[in-house]
Image (cartoon, rainbow, N blue to C red):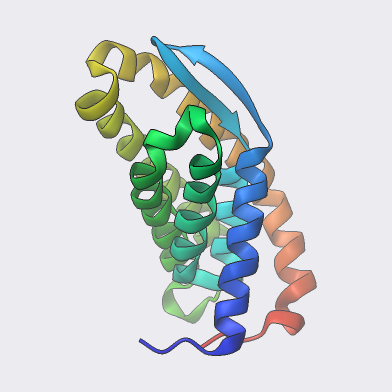
Length: 174
């Protein structure tokens, strides 16, 4: 797979936005450890309508970089790279299906929901099997649901406006 300079720059810019979105968070002590509600998922959904499946790279890199720079979440670098990477990929793949390129609001919402489900399941599995066990993973799922719901509530209207404003600027990245 070849990456043009333009495509790499867009992936990098969106990774930076995913990092900042994750940085904007509220930490919560839940289930015997710390979790957070953040705007990283919002940024992932917006990246999905702008750059399609490449949002997986942006999401994984940007969100994992936040974890790498915060000692509280350093153990989550690899799980976040995987889970948020898949979240962005799924949301972007669906948003760009059938040559819609993120321009169909219904298809985007379906992509956001599917990506959100990937995130919820992924973090639940990592919490359960690696970090805190079933009971605490179930409790921490509530914070994940909050982050996903916040992401949906903000990204749905914002992505429509951003997509309209940037269509001519971004154009095709392939």
